[in-house]
Length: 457
Image (cartoon, rainbow, N blue to C red; front, side):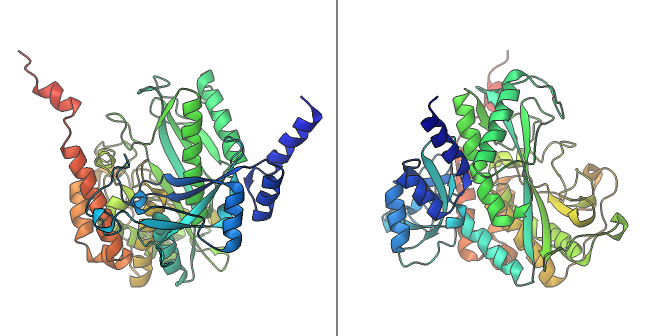
């Protein structure tokens, strides 16, 4: 390898991860970066957008204009990107008009696993400059602003589970929970994943195999809430990139197989004046006032907001299996993984783990729903019920989690709390998304129906 090539590679390595606009400009000048992907998180939490020539991107941010435009339907489709009727944001009546992209330059990062490419998260705006209030990133921002009115900021650590498969079968046939001896395929995948996430500026805290065959858990360090969600979208992009390169498949379904459950757990703490508001010297002092109001708000508010953290019919199959580590009741407990809200950590690290969201949940929406419920608890100074002691699956005093998306939609669409928390436009938009999911599944004949319905004589 020539010394010139080595020097070039070292320069790119130094610019890995989050970078400034000046650093991007220097990388463009020396032809290290030629493309900037401008992206808006969609309703499913996927990054959607365009690849811009890097020099065009720099010219547009210098002029203060939107860097790009896209059809508004990117925020009003199903998972297959099919244009759907019934959204106020866009449709045939509006001619499927454009929305603008305004980059959040704090999110600008180099993607070393995609040579010559940088990525920036964008805000979605209407042609008149008003924000698109149903965009997931904006919905989370709105809840963070409401929380700030109480003097709090949210810090979040995300814990993601997914299934790693070869085709449609798990890459390993048995339980490797907490194993440190893995087949070469898994060892290689973990190494590449950890290296790639470090290089894009989203380093992991821990990676482990989970309890189901082929199941992986990735835990991220604590940080500001919006940054945590932005990093999570990059993580999912990296996972898809690596699995495709290795001939594998990653599924973020909540229930990819019968009896298998994958979640997206939200580790949440509130901070005030630079200090953790949930901190205690002893667990006998739990919950603090701020934590108590937050727990009570979560248990009271989240049943109204289920389509934001459990958005598909499959989401609810995760709740159906007892002792699956997915909650079945709206309860809380201290270090109890069977509860919907688990108090965990020690001292300054004491925090809440919200275990309701499934693996396919959009982190911006799931966290926005949780913060809206916390704000409700703080506003009303709600008091939590007694903590669940013992087996959380035998709790018959607490409200059950929603049984299916139809039930969740009925409570969401007709909820005065949801309207108060999110605004009527957001409620209508995501109610319509839930209706489309239900309709899509109702029109499909499943393997179970065929197995049970064919003549067995």
